[in-house]
Length: 469
Image (cartoon, rainbow, N blue to C red; front, side, top):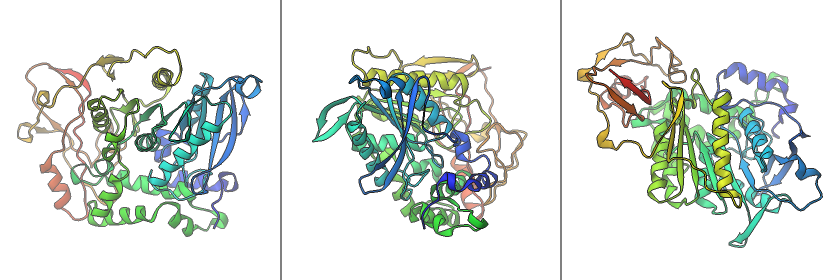
C-alpha cells in the first residue's frame, strides 16, 4: 500500500495532534507547511534524490538568492540537515536553521529522513540505511552546480560540507562522521551517547519517553492513514523496522531491556563509534534535558577531546523538555551564531579559527553565558547519602505502566506522584557545576523489583551552577 503524502491526507495530522499532544515533534520543532519559493535572501527548491538502494529521499535545497539568478560560476560550502524523530524537513527548527545558513552563504540540503515526511522507505532508527542515505546525499551535493568541491576522496566526489541538526539528526551526524570522512565539520544538537543508557539508565526503563517515541515514530513514518476513518494497520506495521515493535513490546512486558534490545540500540549509538571520528565537532546539549541528559553530550565531548579531535561543548537551559526556557528566541539565535561560526571556521577559506572556549554554558542565576576549560574531575564531585536526607514535601512515589504524571517531560511541575524530592543539609557555601554522575541503586531496586507492574526513573536534578549557603 502506498504511503499517503501530507497534502493527500489533511485529517491525519489533526488526529495525531489530539492523540499525541505534547509529542516529540512539538518539543523540538513541529512540522509546518511551505512551498518552493525565493525570498529576498534565499531560494528554496524541492528535490527528489535516489539513494543507494533506489529509495527516493525528498529534500529542500536552500541557496543564497544570488546563486539561483547569477550567471557567474560562484560556488558555496554546503550544510546537510535532517530532522528530529517524528518530524520532517518542514519542522520549525529545520526551516529556521536552513534559512539562516543560506542567508549567510551556504547551500543547504534539508531532507526527510528515510520513512518520514515525503521520503520512501522504512525507518531504521539511524541504522545502516540512514547512514548510507546521508553518504548518498553528500555525493549529490558534490555534483550540485553551486556547491564548492575539494579533491576527491577514495574516488568519490568531495563537497565542502558540514552537518547540523537536532536530536535524531544529531545522533545521525556522529554515525555518519564515523563512516564518511568527506565531512568537514558537524554540530550534533541534543544527541545521545548510548541509547541503552538513554532509555534505561541504571537498568530502569523510562516508560514515558519510550512510549511517546514509539507512538510518534509509527504515527509519523508511513503513518496512520485516516481515509474513510479506517486505520491502516499495514502502514503501522511497516512504517518502522520490525525490531522496534519487538523491542517496545518486550521492554514493556519484561520491564528491562532484552539482549536483542541492547544490541540494536548499541549499534546505533556513538559509544560504539567515537574512536572512528576525527572530524571537528561542536556538541550542543541542554541542562534540563530528560531524554538525552547533558551527561551524554559530556561523555561524547570527553571521548573526542581525549582523542585529540577538535571539539567544543555548549550547554544551554533547554532540551527535550517542556516548561523550561528552550532553544527559542535569543537563545536559539545565540546558538545558531556559534554553529555558523563553527562551520565558517572549518568550511570556508581564509577564516581565522573561532575563539570558542572548550566549554560554554548558560548560568541561570546570572542569566549569562560562562566559559570554562574543563568540568571538575570525578574526585571533586559531591556524594549525597539518603541517610543524611530529609524527605521533601512530595514523598509519595507511585508509578504504573501508564505514567501517572508529566514530571519526566516537565520536571518543574510540583506535586507529581512519579517524583520524590529530598533535602540535603549544606553547612558551607560551594559552587555546583555539572550533572549527577550516577543513579541511586537503592531506589532503583524498589522501582525495578518491588512491583512487576511499575518502574522508576530517579533523577538527581541539581542546578548546573549555584551557590548554596
